[in-house]
Image (cartoon, rainbow, N blue to C red; front, side, top):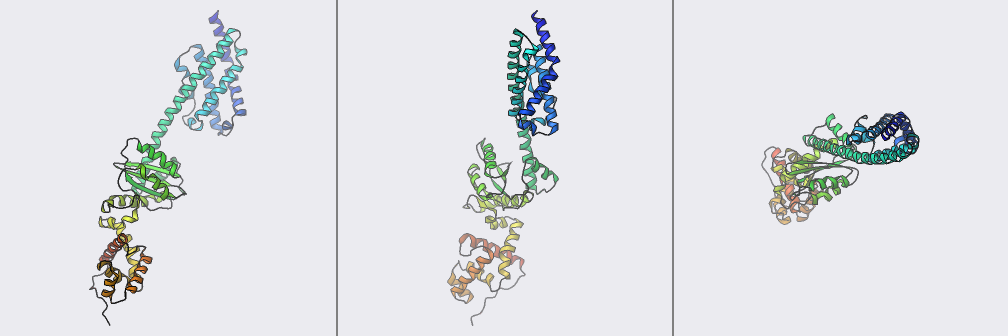
Length: 392
């Protein structure tokens, strides 16, 4: 008798499965703002998921088994992309709504003690489906995280190689990068702690609007983008990097030009051994003399064109004054005697040199930059005998 009553309940459930699905979708449309905001295609897929859930419940009620409350089986009717449209919270609200709909119709489907058994079965099944759904979303998050990490690594590699193609644009779009904002690249040592790279990624994404983290051997390359102060954001991440120099490349207009910033940052990091007392972090331009001495042609060209060339083109013997000042041990009086001018004239010319080149000859470090630029500039000039003015 009991088996006959259960069979009758199952028969009625199957007869009303379409009705239950329609009632659930009607309530979902009336009560859920997130559902109404979805595209029509996604809404239709959710209808299939709801129907699949009710059908799976009937199968489980007839033959209780773990496989029949597996959420992945319920979602099998819909494409995997639906999980991106539906959050776990939305999925659980759908399960809750289905439970309420089935409960509301239990008196029509079963009677007597079968009604209470059906209600209890619905609650047990919904609980198991909720746990199973959480596992489905957790696995999806792991897969998505691994995919994002690989896409991030490929994007950083493309930036370091200087690629500017559709593949790079596609990867950046996949990662949600805003291609219209400025970018700076930071290079430093890999943190020693095993889990510190995870914290670095998390903090980098909070510090800047966009962030990519690339691990290359014992080096870390950070690509930071956004409308805020990128240098300040980069500075805030320095404590999370390993011991040693940290170098910031120049800020560039967009991520598609990030390879310029990356070249500067990595060149500065490679040359940083030549200046052990460099600030942390330092700009790539701070290492121009070390980069030039190590064979960085870009640094050589920058020193020649932006430091030496303006001095050579200016009116007055600024190059000769700089050479005399540096060769005399940075002594105003000694330089003035060598040039047969008053020390105030040398002082005035040094100020002009600082204005034109951006580097102050009276500062020890900046004077070294000027000295290297002077040597590089002279190497390009035709050979000539240096002549000092004669005393009148």
